[in-house]
Image 1: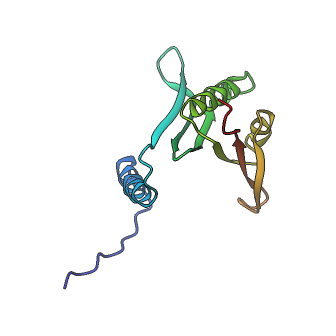
Image 2: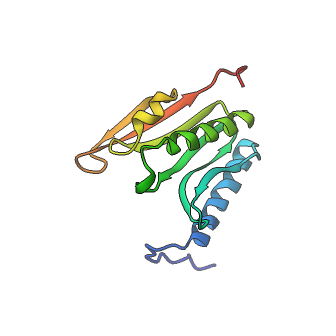
Length: 146
């Protein structure tokens, strides 16, 4: 009989290791659903040195999209760059036939920005982190509208 794999503490998985976990999840999900259309979806802004100073990153799959990371460098906030990245993200998701885009945003981040472009709050988790709220938002599109 094969020995069971052992559990080891690893609180510092590398990006390559995390990618391997994501790949395993995607393989399972696409077999379970028959949907094999998963793709990364991201836009970045770079400074004059080529360094990323703002980004919107996520994926599309099976008619949905998730915006997993949205970030603008502190020195560049309040100039509309986040909104521009979000608009580009939404536009590309629509081109791919996405029906819904999901995003999570803490109350101290940007839930109001998402709401201004049509996202609706669908859940709020108070005390995550303590003293704050994690807000889950969704933007839905009509089936025929692209």
